[in-house]
Each structure stands twice: as C-alpha cells, then as structure tokens.
Length: 450
Image (cartoon, rainbow, N blue to C red; front, side, top):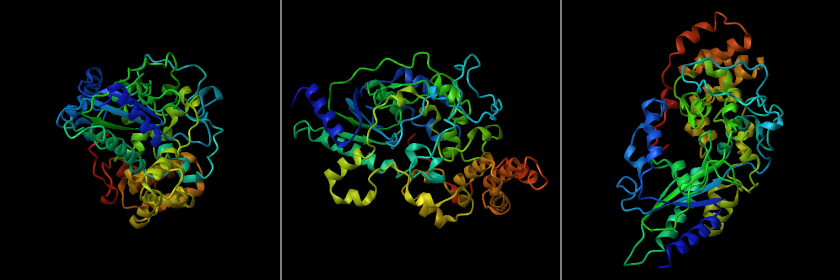
C-alpha cells in the first residue's frame, strides 16, 4: 500500500470531492485527557440538564480505539460540512448588533457567567435589529436556527460519511483488511475535541468548532478506521481578546470563556428541555422558536468565511449515486426553508393535531422538539412579540391544550401581552409552572449521541 501520507491525501481528496468543506485526520489510539477532564466537570456540575444521555458512556468519550467504538482503531477522519446561508453573510458586532433596547437583563438563576467576565463595551447583544428574513424564510423559518431550516441533515450528511468509510475499506487488501466505522450523531464521542485534534479547526470561546475560511456554521461527521494515516496538527486558538460570542448570548449562558451552561442556552431550552422554561429566561428567548444562532452570527470568523454553495454535497452525492438520492431529498439546497413552512403561522402551532404535526415536521429537525415542545416555544415567542392579535389563539391554548406546559406558556404570554396578571391568567401559571414533562404526544426517546 502507498505510504500513510499518500493515503491521507487520497482520503482528503475523496472527501472534498464529495462536497465536504474541510477534512482533518487525528490519531484514534490516544486519550483526550484535557477534554475528558472538562467533560467530567460538566457532568459533576449537572450541566447536562435533562439530557441524561450526556452523562453516560464515559469510556467511549475518552477514546475511540476501544470496543465501544472500534477496537484497534488507529485514525479518525474528521469531516466538516458548511450550512451557512448562501444568501447573506452573517452579521458581525461592528455593524451595530444589539437586542431590543427595551430588553432587561435576565434574572440571576445562580448558573450565570463568571462574575469576573467583563463584556466588550458598546457591542450590544443579540441579533442585528435591522435583520430582514432571508428569501423564502417565512414567519416559521425565521425563528429556526440555520442548520434546521430545511431537511434533516443527518440523512445526506450520514450518506457522505458512509461513502468516506467505504472508500477507506477499499484501501485495504485480503491480507490486511481495513475496517472503518462512520459516525454522524449516532455514537457518544467528543466530536469537536477530535476535530480540533485533527487540525480541522479550533474551538472558540462559545464552544463551537471554528474552521478558518469556513466558519463555525458547520456540521461534523467522523470515520474511525484501523488504517494508519498521516495526521494533522492541532491549531492554535485564535479568538484572542474577542468576547463577541459571550456578550451576544441572550440568556448569559456562558459561565466563562469556553464554558457553556446548556441549562441557560436557548438552543437547549427550545429543543431538548422538556419542562416549563424558567420564567427568568423567557423574555431573553426573544423570537427564537427552535435553536439560536446569536453566538455564531456575531463571530468575525463567520463574517470573513468564504461563501460556499450549501448544495455542494448534495450535487456530488447525486452524481455518485444516481436519481434515487435526488428524488429522496427533493431539494437542491437541503438547508433552504421548506415551502410547506411558508404556509404556517406561529398561532397554527398551538392548534395542530398529531397528524398535522407529522405532515409539518416529517423529515426535518423540528421533530426533535416534539409537537408540544414547539407549541410551548411558540407561546413564548408570541408573548415576546407583543402582538395582541395573538390573544384569541393563546386563550384557546391556555384553556384547552392537552399539554400542561403549553397551557402554562400560553397563560404567561397572555399576561405579558395584557401587561396585567389577570385573574384568568394567574391560575394557569400556578397550576402549570411545575409541569415536568410533555404529554405522551410530545415525548421522544433520548438518543445515544449528543
């Protein structure tokens, strides 16, 4: 077989041809000592919140060459695919970003950022108030994080990762076979840590992997293999004194640089959190319905990233696999807002039944939050939006929705819109604020990955 360096270049070339934006390789037969120590502290502090699976499978997270991932593994090929919009570059802080000036800081829940942290003066927080919805966004898509505005990325990204694994296996022989295991959110590994080890990018102060020239709006996949490949070198951390991402967080979820408390993070609250959203964080959620991009849209590395066509992997996959893939996806750009969402208002989410929900969410990341979880989020967004025309729909949800957390969130929104904790709203708040879970129709089984 060719020398390891030549093999590594062949693997990189194959992955880039598929449409991945960056490729890095690290040794798999080593432990992530510093990263697993941070993971231990994370679990000990209970910062996983309701994501109980994050506290499991520690050994698999510590190394890749054991039985839980791939015994005898020598290398891990780390892959990044950009989902940044091709319509518009992200907004950066020096363009005057800032949340509504009427915003008040969130209540101190005892899990805030390091009190020694000093925000950068005059940067403001949150998204650009001049933001206009992207073409085709619609009301629903405008409140969804960029990675989730189209099809479920796992479908096509996993297909690309599997192709890289299949290619690696062809580099073996009958006497020396190569094993390769593709991973794409389906195994408990510290993927950003491995990507950093592979020199794919560096981890920013917001915990996101930043790929120079591409940015942090990337999806990651890995192939763990028994083939020994030439590896890259970790990058030097390049954030310097910049704290734009920390200052932009609407809920002050960063305890300190590099330390995110998910229990305050809008992405966690709107997607993984199954209970009532803490009262002190609701106003700060703003109009985020599913996920949040604020700590990324202010990052200078995203503003400077080269604009890349989001459909590159799709086009390459279609060329390699034929019409079946094209018809299965049914879209040129898998991250473009789906047309079906343009016909849905936020108020509609409070009244749809399970059949309608399946039609709306099928094949999309929205299924992760569940029907009732998204309805709860919609109530909070409507309350923050301040439009009294939503009151009839909110009153109906507060009185008749089957999920306690939706009834409570609707009552909260009513009180916020009416600027008065009326007699009709208070009982709902008191009765439902302690709701600990969704109704059966909103449940989902926790995954094994993170």
